[in-house]
Amino acid sequence: MWNPWRTRCPECRALLKMGTPSKLAAVLSVPGGMLFGGIPIYMEETGRWATMGSLMYFLIGGALLAYLGRILWPKTKLLLKTGAVKKNGAA
Image (tube, rainbow, N blue to C red):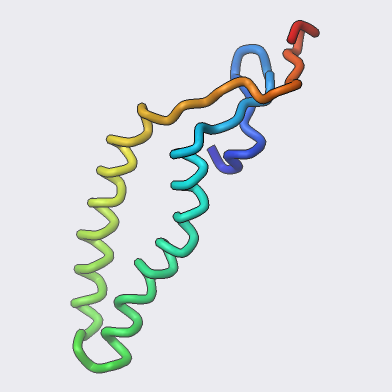
């Protein structure tokens, strides 16, 4: 799901919307991603880590994030968007 605000039902092509927790997670992923990438940059620039430390950080952190995404994905709620029209014309 690349754009959570333009997701369509795969069967009827009706426009769907995400639940509030899912919207919050989508919005917070931008600053969270910047923080996730900024930590190893800061640690390398201050001389606290070598490149191997950053690589290990991304390896372990990326695996944990992928595992978290796998756990949370089935809990995502998609609802029919208000005023959305299905492909066959029914609302």
